[in-house]
Image (cartoon, rainbow, N blue to C red; front, side):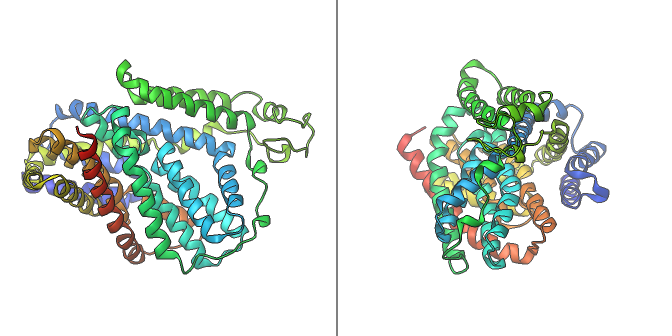
Length: 460
């Protein structure tokens, strides 16, 4: 039966990556779950257990992506990117640094998928306007893809991996932030340093910022644009209040997405947006402080909702049922034994050992099943106190950073590569691996070392 569980997992992973006949990740994973049930690797009684683990994380992630898609339609991210490009003042290396930092902020607030899939096309468009050569453009594009995951450590909501882990180990938003915000800062700094060293020769020294559009022209719906800042403030307060009030994060994020969706779907959206541009008087072609009427357009909520990652819901229940089959056959206990042996050698060795093992697993078999397999193993390892906490957060770091080593490490990377192909930028898997492993390993080791040091300082 153990062999059957491994085969079911392998088949499911192939289906998720391959997605035959355009099934999508959700139906592919659900097919694996049906196979696991038919082979009795898992039973029907396991379904409620798995659903209890993944439902909050899944719906919170979908709501956060919905918010990011609505704000993208309003022009927020393009507006921010154009401002960052102007702050560069024609210095190409400063622009590179600012784009990486912008990607880190977007990843922290809007999750890694938002940073990778929304910021990348905007940066490509900006690089075309600046007439950057292909090698330079590739440096900026790879930096956007890398920082999307590397910058997704600080908050519970920054990555689906983080939400799953926080739910599994009952970690509150405030405690998670207290541990991981400092680690996230170290990770971003390390990422910036490694990216700059790797690409320094191809980054242009100078560029002409006058080639770029006015940031105000990027705003297509001023009212939704402004409402976004209010909603983000509400979300931040709500996330911290969720734990003491026993409110799931998915409810907080869901209310935020609903509120922003109502603002964006107002009728008639386009005419109302025109009326809110200061100083225009509704006259076509006039420019106000936050946009021009020439750039205004209504937001299609139907389009936004259709583009939301609903397949993640099916993927979560399907893939995690398959992973639960590995647990039922005792395979997670084997990993628990490895973690237990590592944990007896001090904080630094525990952080590095668990984090590197998880990173390797995530790069080979995707980070979403890995994080749950490792969480089950950590739970079974029997560690307590500081050692247990180091293992939990090392799992997060390994699952967030490890996927950058290979193209199949995360779904976000696969989607990101697909977006690049549509834009005419092809990165082969061999080339990706050669770049990914060089960029990831030093950042991973620095982040895990910082975790051990920080937790020793603040205690458990």
